[in-house]
Amino acid sequence: VKTAGLRVIVTGGGSGIGLAIARRLAQANTVAIVGRDPVKLREAQRQDPALRAQVLDVSNEASASAGVTSVGAELGGIDMLVNAAGMVVGFDPVGPNSAALAERDMQVNFLGSLRMVRLCLPYLQESTQGAVVLISSAMAIAPAPGFAVYSASKAAVHSLARSLRRELRSLKVYEVQPTWVDTGPTRDMNISKLDARVVAEKLIVGLAADRDEIGVGQTGAVRFASRLSNRLAEALVARATRG
Ligand SMILES: NC(=O)c1ccc[n+]([C@@H]2O[C@H](COP(=O)([O-])OP(=O)(O)OC[C@H]3O[C@@H](n4cnc5c(N)ncnc54)[C@H](OP(=O)(O)O)[C@@H]3O)[C@@H](O)[C@H]2O)c1
Image 1 (cartoon, rainbow, N blue to C red):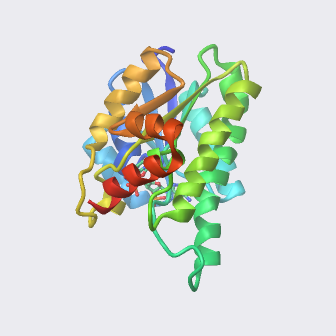
Image 2 (image 1 turned 180 degrees about the vertical axis):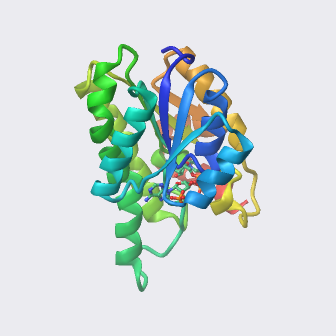
Image 3 (image 1 turned 30 degrees about the horizontal axis):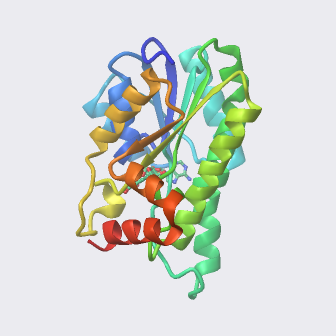
């Protein structure tokens, strides 16, 4: 797929991986970042004035619909959706309050991704370059200890990417699967982490090579291990998560 001259919307573009991708893509494309917090969006724009910004909550139909319409009008169309909005939170899946936490995280990570694809679809289908990028994780392949719901939400995103690739044949569907990345939610995890800019660079390389699944970090090893044994893949992810 082309990686220049596109009109791109990046969810979760106010921080972390989404912001790194937005900045990288903005070198050769028109990019709008969207998220809930206007302060974060303004700060990102201050640092990179080429970025457009729009407040949008992917877990709320009315907000997401209005936000997509507004971005579509401002950019004069949308060629690429990058779904980086996500909640990276570990909690006991059967502990107190787990029902509410699980619902919140699935709303953003899975249903939010699906909602954004649906709302952007009319624009993407108008484009000759229509493409969707979903950010899942190595934990889509093997779950991380302490992150049961997060891992399940990413496995759901992985499955969704595969289905969309088959069912929306007019669109390109890419999935980025990083191992742990150094961003706000992982700040206190004393483990080896990727730089978010590495994820952005790998995405550009993967798009140019038209690679459906773009692994970053040790994801290739996790994928290979999972073909031999689930337990081996889980052990690799556990080691990466516990340090
Ligand atoms: N960090 C890692 O180790 C890692 C590894 C693999 C994959 N990932 C994935 O990468 C993506 C980005 O994560 P990150 O590590 O960069 O964390 P982050 O800095 O916290 O980024 C997440 C972004 O999502 C936005 N967001 C959250 N809920 C939202 C909602 N309801 N509507 C719109 N935007 C929302 C947040 O902005 P607002 O709060 O302003 O809405 C924030 O900018 C996630 O999908 C995550 O699962 C992360």
